[in-house]
Length: 216
Image (cartoon, rainbow, N blue to C red; front, top):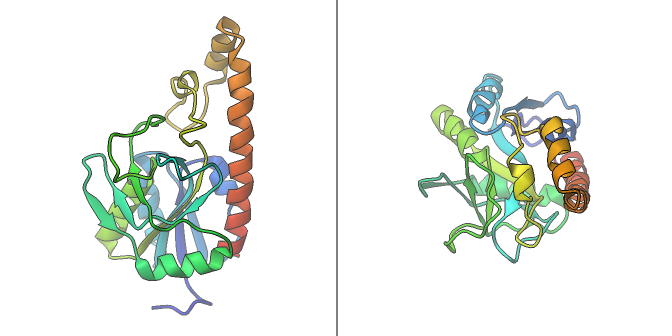
């Protein structure tokens, strides 16, 4: 295993904004892939003979105890069939120490191919994302340790409105023209948009700050 100083880390994110949060570092290799495309992105960074691969970015809270801007490092990653794999306890501890702030580590994260904003009928799941399981699959194939570090964006109290979920494209971006017409049809949605944008910006500030601590 490489020393901490020379540790080579591969990072897979889902969104362009998440990618921008990561500082430049010669030992950090970043690739972006939304949803299932995260698998291909992981394969790309794994070509760099890395020591650890991380699924990094935003996630949704599915447990009432987990709130917007909380930091989580999941112990288990579930797929949609509820099969799970354990993340690297060694690197989870290493990353938690580098965070230098409160981290919620006793959590399970599920990867879904669609955005979820309802409480699932299970006590197994604490958070949801769209990439971690696909990244983990590539990591297992290459026998590279895997961890996931996420900042909570939407939670049970502040779910992403359904009208926004309906106009997110395959890259995780809002379709601007569709959004215009949806707001034109029901102007009160502007309030929902302002509220969700507020918590999004808060979670992105936390994610950017966290990336500076972990990857510089």
